[in-house]
Length: 504
Ligand code: XMP
Image 1 (cartoon, rainbow, N blue to C red):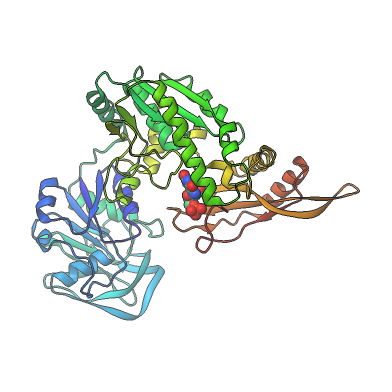
Image 2: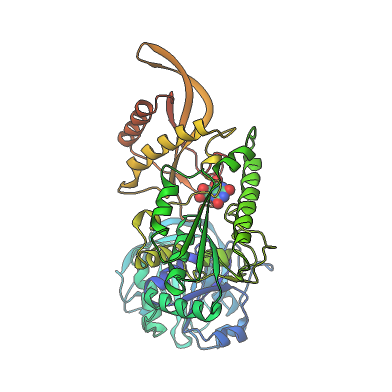
């Protein structure tokens, strides 16, 4: 185990993921974790993340000072390095100008074990204004940029710091630096493998549930699908999956999900509840009201169906590790709060919740899904909001509008699914704006379709993706010719913030 102690850095998950990427198990814990707790967890190494504060401010987060004395190798990144230096008697101060973006770092393999596998001069991602201005006693500089100490260490005490971010792909050789820390300094053996995860979870699930049945709300998303597959490997006869189909899925999606899961060893129940959902949304135009009504109706349908099955003690959820980290380490308590559809109320009569994916990052979940034999379209599925197309049809939702949107969205996906650099999320929106067009000899007055495509790592912020004009032109021409009731196609070039990913 390698502990990643979090001081508020935006890259904590990247760090933990980078460690696992080189076959070493990692977990993220709060920065103030006590030395006693660290001892109990017995990690082979500790990585301190970056953070937004200045270490010299009284209210900035600090680690337990005792951890420097544990003899466990520690790598401080950015804020982590500055905190290490400051707490051990060095000095950190703001610079006139910060370093942001790619910066050239000079080092030498002979200077540090950390840099034994990288070039003497490499570009690294920097993002800091404060810098270490005096090293603590016993430390020496092992890398530098034109203006700052880029790395330092006290090898005797196994304390290491880097000012740049080796965890991002923008740092040349970043992976090698992390690998050197883990293997050459922490003496990692590299025994973390996803195959073991499947075996361990299968054993654990069987032990936990005994002969009881387990219920899962299957949405067709990556997490719930992989969760269903893992459970069906462990307890095929005891797993019941309810797929509440609200009818706001994309073209053929409901049938595709049924196609996959009705063939698996589990009991698959699809509830076609489209008419119910549509009736609830009649006359409703406000996005938040739509979300709330869909969420409530989802729970009602699920409860009704679950009630028909008799007493079921276990509820399974596709909670993944980032969900746990974001909710402060709580399992089960906050049931995927963002997912207001597929999120279930706390008063459901299940006495136990099982979350077999709660140790995994998203890309690990996808790898696991592949290992469990799920088809690529499910495993690589882009995020799709619980309320589905109902929040991509602006204004009141009707079957006619859904059909137009489904068609346009399918064309967009056909054109982008195979793209070399696929955006992280891309979809069509049926706006409630009408515009004049001309088709043949007739003037038309039809709705406008908007295209949205974003690139992001966490969906908290996003850049709009620069789809090549050649592809945009093809999408526009296909949508307007294959779907007669669309007058024109526009391309959304707003990032988040200020816009959100979804239009509603
Ligand atoms: P926004 O629009 O908030 O979207 O920038 C960020 C991410 O969240 C998804 N999203 C939702 N997911 N229920 C969900 O399960 C929702 O109500 C919802 N609204 C947005 C969105 O698709 C994007 O991936």
